[in-house]
Length: 511
Ligand SMILES: Cc1ncc(COP(=O)(O)O)c(C=O)c1O
Image (cartoon, rainbow, N blue to C red; front, side, top):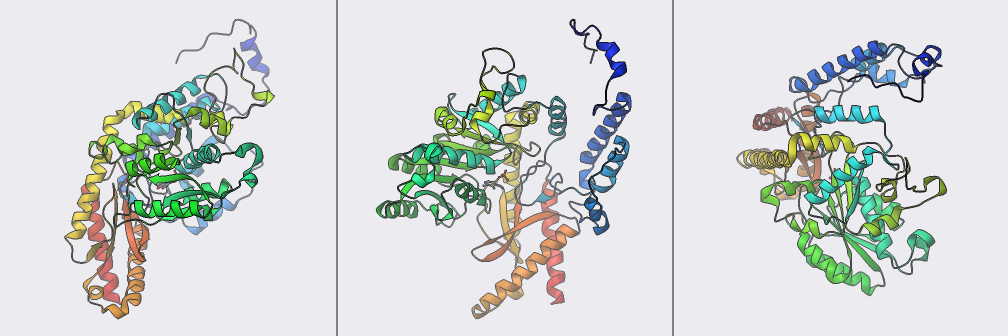
């Protein structure tokens, strides 16, 4: 980069450097440059060689104790701070950068995404307000998300920390628009009737938090039973709404999930959209897992109903592998969206020129005023890879999930516990000794299988071999493998199965 010319109106700019007062800048910029280069080298090696290391390792207690030290009062050199990071922090990641990490639902991140985070922190722009380029970048990224899910140009949206916040944003607009009175002005105490929201029993817990935060109470979240494929049962939904209306409640919204957290199930989106239209209800889609799967050709039909939603929550730090945090809330009617969040005190008045001009003030569309420039890592990642490659990576994960299910189905010691939804496989180690156990010992058997499978899981994680997670389906404990991982190869899944069997056999032989 060439030196910037001196500013014409600051003639003593260079001289002033001599008598500078203390700042937080480095004493020696060249030393800091060298340290920065070292960090980049270390980061590249760290990711390049990730599969040589254990997926996860527990932190030794002695090291963990170092994080109890008191607030540092005096400076430490940047090199020494970095050495401490290298020794005490870098070797103990969560593990979701590894090809055999399949816990909960996490993306891997990418190196360019990490560089983008560094660059956005360098610019340190606040994307809540103001007239600067970061707002344009975020506006473009939001437009790309709208294009992805086939939302109209007039729709609005913003980037948020993740789908929890994106669901909260969508459900806030749903509540405020559907309540029938000015919730912002008079509050929920003025509600003549209890406002109710509908979702399947497989709904992610963040939606419960959102309903609670919105003052509607957990009781207002009506959990609708699911079918054998863990999708919302439409007959039960219709019956619940009818019953609630008859009891004087006020249904306002149905939350459909595209990609449930337990099994990856996709609710019948078009049927729910039809139902919401007929009933005058808000249609919100929690697409944290599966909205971006519209990029997979074979899923376009089952996900087509997303475009009919009034609001959508998407995650980019999951299957799109943007480094944490990156989620997106989209609302079809931008006026309703803005009406739910905009407040314009005198110190935030919009001007016609200068820094306070500009169209895109994202703080008017969400909870936070100060917002990071997280759009940059999304923008750079999408440009680096293009949507086709993301679609291919997702299709491969789906293919891997079906491959894994095939290995499970072919093995008499393993049991598939749910239909494979998208990229999520639930199974358990279920050796013959338990299969032949009489029905009257059902409870004892389930409890023993839970202990056995939990121990398999702990061992896999503690030996650093693989990191699946767990769930309970119909009272049965399962290992759960969510392959949102651009680094996973089929051989990683072969290893998982052989290790589950090895550990399972060893444990069973011991009992
Ligand atoms: C279906 C679903 N919705 C919402 C969330 C919450 O997303 P986040 O962790 O990004 O807030 C998750 C997280 O896994 C999820 O699976």
